[in-house]
Image 1 (cartoon, rainbow, N blue to C red):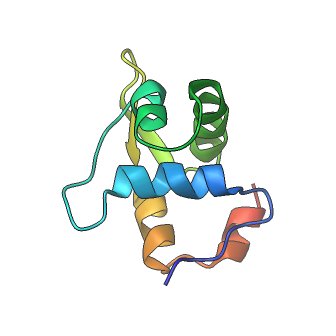
Image 2 (image 1 turned 120 degrees about the vertical axis):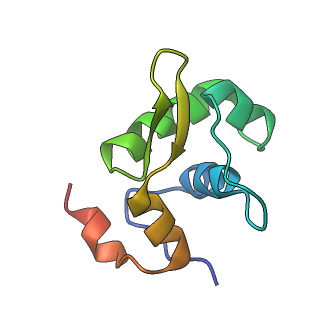
Image 3 (image 1 turned 180 degrees about the vertical axis):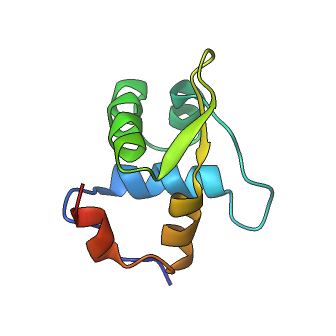
Length: 91
């Protein structure tokens, strides 16, 4: 079952997190362009949401110079339903 969205989250945020999770396979580390290529969202939209997800510590840089992101421990816990969504409201 998917965890509930925080009040500030949209389906774009969920898509980004789930793409990085790559359920059933090894987690991915991707740039916003590659995330957009592998979701239904445009590059600019993904770039905007990646910043928000990073501000909420759900993703982190794997390679800052190349702009490549991966799930953070907090992001993994959220997707597993181990992180109470109310915690995400307090940023």
